Length: 188
Image (cartoon, rainbow, N blue to C red; front, side, top):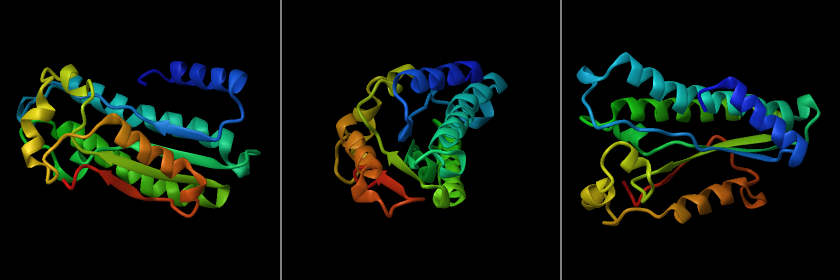
């Protein structure tokens, strides 16, 4: 997700083997070790923003070039994976991650308006704490269990619950939904 050439190669494969493109799930996201902003390095910030913001923008650009009726496509759906952290801020742990997902929220809203008349719906799912490997990559594999008491439903989410929301947003049942930020976060 950090190399434009890799993204272009991926879309070239889609063109050759899976075309026509009808949907994109922008599911890029990394965290680092929990840290206060005062202790974050430039390298950390660049890696976070390049992966979590720039990569999804490049993927959206390539999807639009293929799906937009203005470019000869037949329309489609883009679902960005954001995070409930975008509205919580993740103080003392992941402000950089939260900020990157806030950028994805704004991208979703703006892009949804930009391409709606071109047959493309753009929405976002904002997961809460979910049992995935992202927390282990940040050095805290048990984070969901540590923080689930702060979730009104008193549990972490399952990946399938996020996938179900994504599938619904891409479906015809959501044909009049664009620019939505759907929290799938147990009430958090």
